[in-house]
Picture (tube, rainbow, N blue to C red):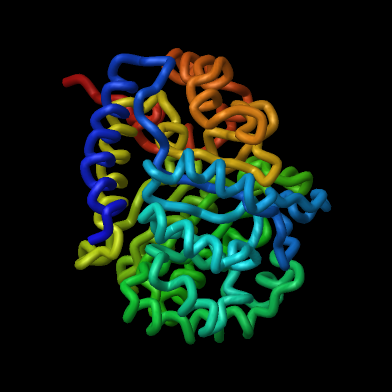
Amino acid sequence: MSSEAQHKIPRESENILRLTEDLALQRLEWVSRPTEIEFGFNNTCNLLCVMCHQADGIPPKSMPAAASRDVLAQILPHALHLTPSDASEPLMNDLDEIVRLCEEHNVQMLLYCNATLLDEATFRKIAPWTHRIWFSIDSHEKETFEALRSGSDFENVIANIRAVMPMAAAARIEIGFNAVVMEPNWRHMPDLVDLVADLGGNDMAMQELLPNSTGYDELKIEGRVDEGEFGAMVAEVRRRAEVRGVSIQLHLHQPWGGEIHATPPRQGSKAPLAEIREMHMDTLARLHPHYCPMAMNYLKVTPDGAVYPCCRGPEELEMGNVLQQTFEEVWNGPEYQEFRRRMYAGDYPEVCRTCVVLTGPSHFPGNQPESSSG
């Protein structure tokens, strides 16, 4: 075990305790540090997906290598997961540099990948420092898939995934499949469960569309899909998941959100600290249902240095800039303190009020079914 790995275990144990105290005491200045880091070395992607602001023609950005190393030297000592992307394809980075950083700080990568660039050589390069890969796949139908993910080739994606699955199993890399649920594809979700099972997958996430692009109004479920029909689709997803042995996280508006547990617990995790952390985070989210579960532990840094408390990174939630301030100055700066005050008070920023990450869980205030008195 490396020296950094030996330090990481007591450091993470203390960090969990400090986060528990931060939330319980409603501190504005937090002693704990985030462990889930989304870091944009660049914002480059090879696809233009309709649900992503890449489709809006965002200007290209990249952080200078020296600056990224300096920033990550401040952040990664406490981190457990690194997601090297910013609404971008993580494999379009300097993978040698990222692997070096992960090894230096004993951090595992968590990748959201469109599977178009993941050939065998690339996989073998990242495998030693990758814990989990989520493949983004939104339909079982070629025509719909390629329409939603402009520039993609459905057959190529499926072939790449089939090739990677046995290598991932041998390397103890967990594979998940992520689908964005929206008006053009919501009816496809049950058949997508079958496709995932046919590919050898047993873990999925279905994420309801968030307002991340100008096409949101034309793609959203709300006001465009009958609730009864949507509920019938979710019921069929649940049935097929149980039959095919696929566990699913349903990040959907209530009452349709929740989880489907159809597989046995994982054995021999490659990143046990990260999985222990996830268990603690689930408990803390239930103890503090008014506080966004992502904002408890997540940090997003864009290529221009802007810092956000969640993966959406809306302009109104910018907390500071690590190219102009130290990370410590941002983490407990006035913007973060005000954001935490509003979370404790339930006085949510407008962008948070419409986000299913905050409002979707069954334990969020107002989502619990009323108890009957007898």
